[in-house]
Image (cartoon, rainbow, N blue to C red; front, side):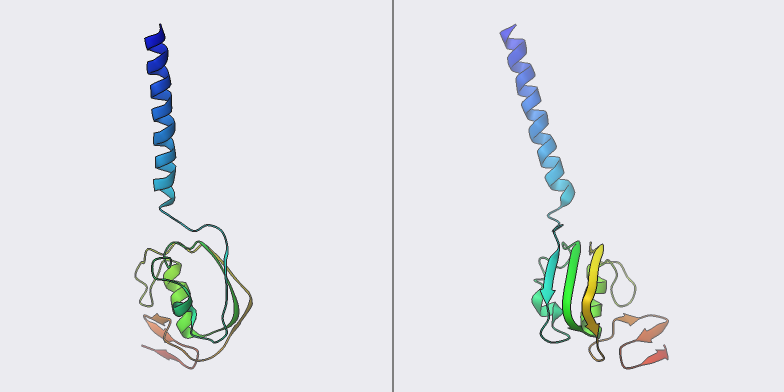
Length: 123
C-alpha cells in the first residue's frame, strides 16, 4: 500500500512539474506586462528596445514623437515587416495615446504602395 501511495505521489509531482514546464514553454519568454518607452527624439525606438526583446513584447506604450523609423519597428514587433512578410513579432497591444506622429524617418511599408511620412506614391 505504501508503495502505491509513493508511486501516486511521484506521478502527481511529475505531472505538476511537467505542467509548469509546458506553461513556461508555451509563453516562450513573452513579455506580457506593459512596457512604456518615452522617446526624447523621433526615430530612436530601435535604439531603445534590445533585439533580444523586440519580438517578445506583447504590450507597448510609447510617449513622445515617433516617425517612419519607429513605425517600421512597431510593425515588425506586431508581426509584419516593411514588405508585408511575417516576423516573429508578438505585439498585440499598442498605446500611442501620448505619442505624436511626425514626418521623417525610414520607409515603414514597401509594397504595392510606398508610404513614408514625407511622400505617398505608387510603387
